[in-house]
Length: 385
Image (cartoon, rainbow, N blue to C red):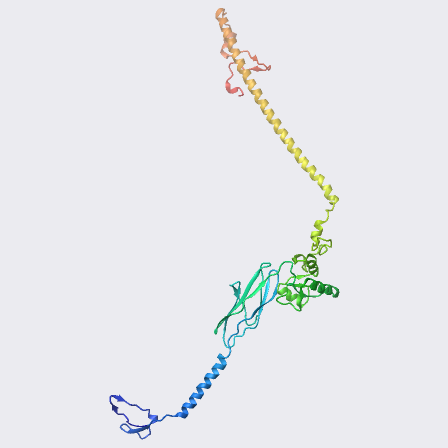
């Protein structure tokens, strides 16, 4: 197709501009240029091939693989804990957002470092109880969930969940321990692992012992396994710790008392007689208490005597006051009789009689106790009430 165009001319109100690099060097304004337009099929085919190759590369790099669904399984279960493990997470070209663990349909928490960790331990579970677990993986390519794993914790009489790692042990002790572990249905593993429930040793040293300390795994003596076998159930490890004070045999050999520790055996033994010095000290204490009791009785007796003396003293005062009052009445009566006699036959007063009347003295009258009461001249303030 041939098209004739005029350079720099406005045709029907439309200005056609051409890049100067596309024009020949001798073209100026007003020149007429012929442009030939044709379809380039070869170029189209090359561009199509290039686009297809790019799409195939993108598909093979990002669309051929997708994040794998986690596969969860139970590794070990005990009376109060469960160890879960899963295959390494395959993310393909997606980015990881989170990996969460769900227990009985509720989120229990996110797994830390999910690309490096492939196991986890859940503790603090109830004995002989069924639990359901599953994982939920979230990535930039979507979300996927693992299958549900149902686990039931063991009964106290089920010892199959015990997983033992041994430390430094004498050869005979190691052989006996292996036989006891086989009899109770437990297992011995090499190395300290996440599912190791107990570390059995007789010496607190070595690399395995240090790793068990770091992971807070109970470090016990071989007697713990023997005690569990004798009792037919799992026992506490407090009295079988390697660094525990051993005050007696690890357990009682008598039938019916299996698993009894040395402390319990001592408590069950008959009491020993007290030392002589304690016996000698006991009478002294009794004597001291008796002396204190005697002092208390004496003080009580003295208090009673004082109270009785006070009552008697008050009684004497009342009697004395009564006697004094009676004496005064008697003196008044005698004085009245004397006045009457003096009126009948009154002699001429003498100097002594006048002095006696001026002083107002009266003869004292003896009371019932033989003591003399004061005369009428005494006031009531001088009488003890």
